[in-house]
Structure formats: structure tokens, C-alpha cells
Length: 459
Image (cartoon, rainbow, N blue to C red; front, side, top):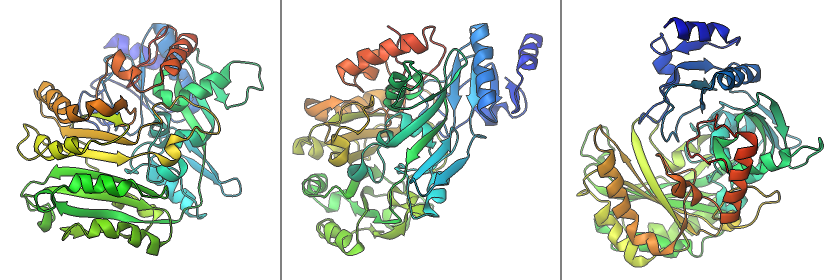
């Protein structure tokens, strides 16, 4: 332990430094995802950008790898040894209402950004779960509640501050005033995740949205024949102001579950319409007409309550997921899904489809690395995982998504919760973009200092 203590004493930072086994170590390394957590030799609880630079330089000088954790929702495979930089203390948000922008520090969750923007009648392009870290979400692309109207969150980033493997802070934008190659780095960071450095903050666009008409509409799967295909047909005429998804899952027969859902196999339509309430009600009418809903929570909500739209769990747990991006939905695949992912499956499945297209399909004003913009839907399946179940769950997810294989165009960065091989990571990008990313990895992190959730190799 003396060697570890010596290394800790060498770190000149404002935030806490914790060795394995120290008080607070487990709390600091834990995030929302409890599967395969980080097990670093040292944790630096960064209090600011200077601490991040010091931690990166310290690790690089000793040949140690570096991982970063804010909320920890998308953790793939944890870091074993090395240095974990925890950014949860770097959670500041500054809003410029005249410019309609916000400066967001590395550890800020979306809810903090939402509340700061709402004071000025604005909203960020946040996700369905506002507890997720805003920066890490955006670096993966970001498909949120306003996605079909405004596009990926990564399309609306103006500036990124990032500490690269050489210990430098680079303030990168689409412009290149310094005569360096950092405009390429700005392209790569937006969609390339944590492969190229530790992002300490970013400037993002805000949009003039105060509220949405939305929420959940719940049906029993066995009481509405063809319910998934009915939703597919409904999406084909939905305007871009409507961002929608569905989630299908079996609810346990337990007291903490709302009574109408207990012991039922349920499909939840999740709607977010950024237009007038009367238009939202009219658009939702065909879904309401499918049958008697178990629960109807569609209403106008302030954007500060956007978490209620998808109503996703916020308690940390261990889970794995897989996804396919598809150019369309085969009705036969939708017919098979309730059985494959239903109550008789060997593990509990949350089966979800998100409607894409709209602004997501258009190229951004400033190009970035986000791939597969031609996808019309994302198909995701997620399961909680107990010890010893990972292989079984992986096989189950393969079987559940197999009927959609014929229309697959790629994979989503944000909804891949688990380790991927190189082929899996490559599927997130256009072929030419992937080659460009590997070249930039070789330029900015040739020694593989950074341990990313979805690693891009240096070529």
C-alpha cells in the first residue's frame, strides 16, 4: 500500500484522491450501472479542469490508463487498475439567454441544465432520463425528447474544452484559428465518445421550448392485437414535432407496481410533442382509440418535468442491452417480439423502439462523427443481470433482435450498454468516418491512455 500512498501524495489536486479500500472509494466509483464497475488503483475526484490535467499527466507519466465517470449510466467494461477521474463535482451550468446557449461542466446531469434553461423559457436537447450526464450523453450523439424536431444533441455543440493525452487543455470549435488540427478533434468528439480525451465542459445550443404534450399511454399487450404494428403505422404520418417511442415489458405482481399494471405484459407508448396541446391530443387520438388504456398519462408538462414522459427507473442496478438501427420495421418481426421478449423469456426484457427520422436524418450545419443518420427506428432490448447470467442474457438479446436483422443499418452509440468488440463499435459509424476516427485516435492518443466505453483503436 505504500506505493499507492506515494502515488497519491504525488497528485497535487484540489479534490479528493482515493486508493482502493479507502473510505469513500466504493461510493466514488459507483454510478447508475452496477455491472462490471470500475476498479481503479486511484480515484481523483476532480474539482475542476486543473485537477483533470494533473490526473491525466500523472497517469501518462506512469503508463497508467485513465477512465472518466460522471453519472455512469453507459458503462461498458470497467477499468481495472489505473486512474479513474470522477467528474461529479464539476457540475456547473451557465446560461446565456440572449445567445440561447449554455456552458455545461463535465459532471452536470441534464436535469440541472434543464432547470437553468427553463428560467429563460429555453430547453436543452436532453434525453428521456434527465439524471444522465449531459456531456457524456452528447459525446455519444444524443437522441432526446426533441430529437425529431432538432436532431442529435451533438449537432448543437458550439465548443468543447478537452484535456488530451499530452496533458494539454484544448478549446476546440469548428473553426481552427490557431493553425492546429483541432477542428478535426471537434468533429471526432461529437459522436466519438470518450476516446480522445477528458472533456471538462461544452457550450451547447438551447431551443425555445417551455413545455411538451406527452407522457405514457399503457395497454395490455394481449388485449390489443397487433399493438406494435399499429404504433408503427401511426409513426409513418407523425410530424417532426412528435418524438415517440414504445416500451414493452412484463410487470411483476408486486405492491410497489401501480395496480393496473401488476402482473401484466404491458406496452407503454411514450410521446413528446413540442407543439400546441390541442394538436398533441389530436395526434394521440388514434393511439387512444386502440382500446381501453390501463393508464393514460398524456398531458401538457413543463419541460422541467420531462422525466415523467418516459418514466424510466432511476435506481442504480446491473443491466445489459443491445440494439439495432433499422431502416424500417417488418410487421412479422413486430408480431414475434411479444413472445420472444415476453413473460416467458428466460430473463426480464425491456423491449423498446424509438422513432427516428426527421431532423435526425438531416446532415448537421457543422459535420460530426455521428453515424447511421438514415435509420428510421432504433430497436433496443435491455435486461437486468444477476451474477452468472451475462452469457444467457447476451444470447437472449441476440434472439430477440434477430427478426429485425434484415433491415439493420448499424448500431446506436447511446443505447449500447455493455462491452463491444471492434466490429460492434465500427457499426456505429459510416465506413469512411470510422477510418478517420482511428487516424485521429492515433494522433491524439497513440498509446491508448483513455479507457472508453466503446473503444476506437489507433491506426
